[in-house]
Each structure stands twice: as C-alpha cells, then as structure tokens.
Image 1 (cartoon, rainbow over the protein chains, first blue to last red):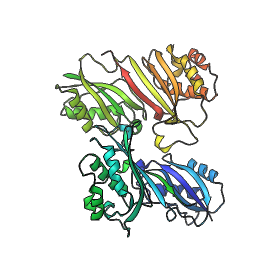
Image 2: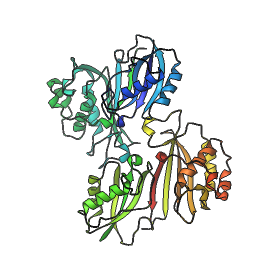
Image 3: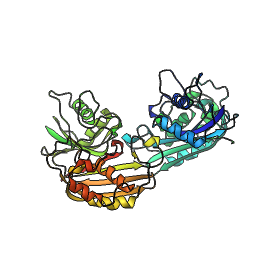
Length: 251
Length: 251
C-alpha cells in the first residue's frame, strides 16, 4: 500500500460535521466514497483519517487527512481525480505521497483556527453561514489585550464542552490575536496551538465577546482558567464563524 | 390603505427564484407571508409587488418591492418588524411609506446588475453559490472593449431566452464595464440599463466570456445584435454569478 496526505478546504454549511455518522452527510464519509471509487471499491473499504474532527457547520481552509491506496499515483493526478469526483463544497488543494509512518492526527503538532464575527443590527444574508453575528459594539483593543492571557500552557478545563472524553485538558496556545477587517467589516480572531479541546475555540471566542462588549472584566481569563469549571465560561459561539486554517507537521 | 416601499437583499441560493410558484420556496412568497403576518392575516391576503423577477439562484443586493398595509407605521419600525420575521437569507435594508401612486415595477427607470466570475482550475468551495467558475484565462481589456458595443439603445432579440413573452426587445444599456478584482481574484461585469430581458445579462456575459477567451472575435457583438437571432449568442452564464445591485426611481 502507498500512503497519501491530502490538504483540503470545505464549506461546512451542508455537512453534519467531519466524522462519519449513520444517515448523515459528513466530510469524512464524502472523502471515503471518493477515495474508494478511485481504488475501484476494494473490500474491506479504505479509511480516510483526518487531523481531527470539526463540528456541523464549521469550515476548513486547509484540513489534512491521510489514506492508503493500493497503487502509486503522482500527487497532482490524485488531486485532480479527487476533485473531479468530490462535490463542490470540498476542494482538495494538495495531494502527495508520504511515508507509511505519516499519520494526519498523531503527527500534527500545530493547528490554527480563525473565527469570523460580523457586526451590524442584522446579519448580512450572504454571511449567515460564514460568520457569527454579534450586534453590540466591540472593543477590539480590549479583546486583543485579554486574549494574551490565553497564550501559553494552561489547563483548559473551563473551556471544554461537557462530555469531552479527553483525559488531559492541558494545551498550549502559541499565539492569539483579534483584529478588525475593514474591507469585510468583520472582527477576526485567530488562535494557534498544539491542539484544541472540543468546542474550545468557540468557548474562548464567546468569552472574549463578553469582554469586548464590557460584560466581563478585561482580566477575567486568569480567574476562569484557574477555576477549572466550565460554568465560568458560559457561552459557545456559533459553528458558522469557525474555520480550521491550517495544520502543521514536521515533514 | 398605506403604501410602503422596501429595499432588500437576498441570497438566492435556496430560493426557486423571485416569483410565487406552487410548492416552491420563493422570495415573493416569503415576503408575502411576512407582510400578511404583520397585517394580522387579512382576507384576501395582501400582495407584494417586486421591481421584477430574478431566477432561481440569482442574488440581490438591493431589490425593491411595494405593498399596502391597512395602517400607518414608521418605515424603520416596519423594517425591523419584517427582519424579525423573515428568514436569514432575506434582509430588508430600508422601508418607507410612499405615495399610493408608487409602483415598484412600473416606476423603475434604471436597473443595475453585477456578474461575478471566479477563476482557477477548480471552484473555491466558498464561492460555488456566489460566482460562476470559468477556468480558462480571460483578457479583461478585450472584454471591456467589446462590451462597449452593448451600450446604447438596441434590439436585444439575440440576447433573450427563448419563450420570452415580451413584445418589444428594444432596451437601452447606459453603462457596461468589466474589471478584475485583485482582492477576491475575480472578474466582475456590471451593466446598468432601463430594463433587461429574460436572461439577457447571463447571455451577454456568456458571449463576453467567449470573447475574453478568444473563442469569438472582439467585434462580434454588432453582428450578433444585427442578426436578431438567439442562436448567434449561444450560451447562458450560470445563475449563481448574477446579482441585482440596485433599482432606481424618480422619487
């Protein structure tokens, strides 16, 4: 078998998330159908392994996955073959043959997420699936200062959705920033780290929006982190605003 | 009765066009449901009259319609009431009371349409419903020069979809232009005129794309106009790229 790594974008609007679920259209299942078609439907079917899951409605600009094929094919031919089979809401941007040791999930050492917030009294119809809408004024400088308290190695127990099975809640955030995009009239958040817990980015954004709209003190994050209590962070920002921007490997 | 004019945007992706059709979700029907709800469901139901139809998948940045209500309400209150009832893919941007003589269709004297074309080998998943995809290189200067032949008063019989019931095919185009948007890596077309025939903009764009990709001579438009024959123009560009930008009135 030959192992391949693919990098792909998807519009999460019409997917019930990444992971295969019975009777649902998911990204993983859609990729598996395409890969098995290229491999002439082997038995048992081939699996596709993503760098991690994304929820229903969450988007990706450069998600990564790996799979094995029973033949040797140039990366660019594989990319074009996949794109000619896949529906238009998934686009393979790069495909390459990699070592059989490569694993999209276990070898990932760095992920970056972006979150888009649109402002205004009502949501722009063209942004309803691609941003979260927040109608109250936001103080970007205040959020930019506060989010620096998320940078570093922390126990993110207060920032994980209930029901997460992960044992250690310790993760490292390398970089966090917030800025206003004048062209698109949006507020953008970006976080890079060595991994993120279930709903972590959406919970961090919800808390930062409370700080940015003066519903919480600017220095509240150290207190919430120390509490190790999900009830301290409260909200979860909507899925539609979240994008997996890239996944990095030592390869 | 009091007459109101509304200006509204919609994402056409999930609408079967503007006009009411049995068993289909349309813009006109969706607006009528909201207006009748505000009017406490009178019998017979109130009608909503648009400046003109748009096809399934076609978008609007500022479409205009009028309707009558049995009471006097400030425009801004009406706008907010409609937006709180309407689904997120329609947004009322402005509402105002107008003279009972005002008619959104008969009084419109100027309409502007934009057409977005995305380039690249495969379509960006986030643009699949918002642009037409054209993968071959395009010569913008060539299209910009050619489209000047559309400006002025012409018989557009060669540029109307078969089956149009309109008697006169004479329309005036005030302005036509083509440019490259570097930020979004798109080619944009814009046309303003005193009215457009069924599919006229999409047929004009399809022909300009043939000129821009050297499949037709640059001076082909006068010949096609003079032929008064739909078969001379051939294609129709996809609905997803088309936007009604605005409608002007003497008011």
